Figure 1 (cartoon, rainbow, N blue to C red):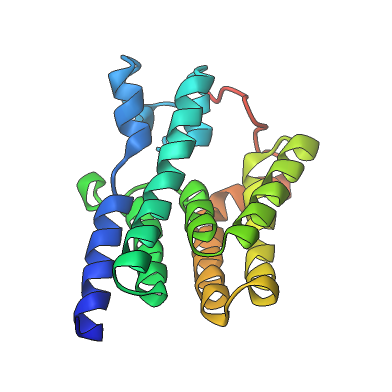
Figure 2: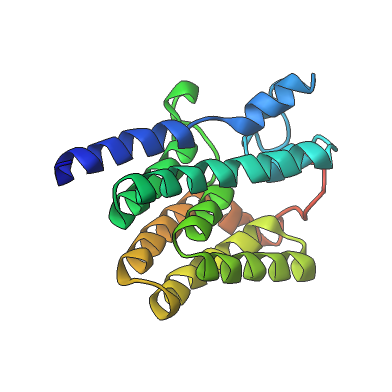
Length: 199
């Protein structure tokens, strides 16, 4: 398969998988309405947790992570590791900007972790451990995500391939941009803690 065609397929396939809004679907199926009208209005696991249903939040976390990981793995084994990275990155972009929701999606934390776990699992595990450690200590999801994303490119550079580090840097920058409102609240000391219901 020509390289150009492989990359195009990876972009399209990854984007379509990544754009599936599992948080929105799960909450609606549970009879709790539209997650976009709850808490922050985000479709990710942290906001799903604000419904009071930890099981739904966990399912969202796993599925949002899994869709990115599956996209990366499918194209890695079917075409090449490079195609896998492209598909994983496209899945991240699809989650953040899904065409079905007017390009208003999640902030990409779970999909970011899914890409890393699928393309460089030791790095993915270290980033997950960083997120978990920060969450246990500070109980602020956004802070945990920002710190984990910030060190991901460095960990990828040290323990994985250079192309993984480049992708991690790009995705981390986009993740930080998606969290700009959270960063503003963090600086003001107004960011809610994990599990808190936001009116």
